[in-house]
Image (cartoon, rainbow, N blue to C red; front, side, top):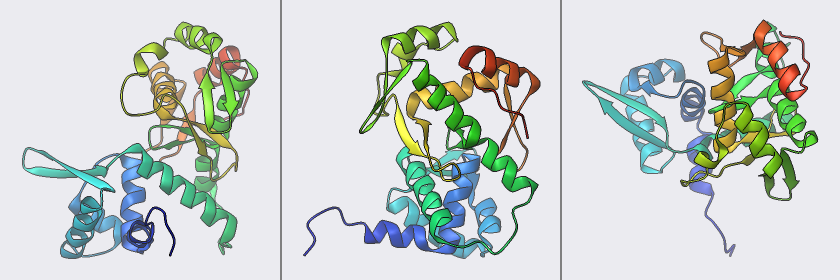
Length: 231
């Protein structure tokens, strides 16, 4: 008998198409109502309620009440990491029968991965930080260096304030479209928030893709040495 974590239950919960669509929607949108999730999953409200009860009981989703409404979200960042890893596995193993369209290219270029930057832009930013000496590559992920703390402080972040808490400062997240790691964790989230605040990137309505702005193309090139043409 296998002596280790029991993964079958979590895998079965995620493996249901309706629940998988719900979880991916929460990964992209952050928080949604049961009615919105029912529409996304293509199921009745009653069926959606049953799915959501299973997801919350298993610790994959969480629910919060705001006034008369109940909003569902992913329980924690590790759930988003698992979904991203499964997306990478699906791309690598399952043939796709449709030709990628413009929206696919936008998602592959730059997107949010839960709360940090992914796609070509996210990967390029990560490895630029490595080349600049801001991050060290370790077997278990990335390590922020002293030089990195100085650089990112000058960029408007305070890495020392990100250290407390249960969430790791840095996390290596395998990018499903680029097949290379990008930076997650509290530092990855702070970088994306800062880029949004500066207007370097902008969210695309109805998609987890983000657009690289004119200011962003200049900013990423000048500060991080990342030179990409926007999509």
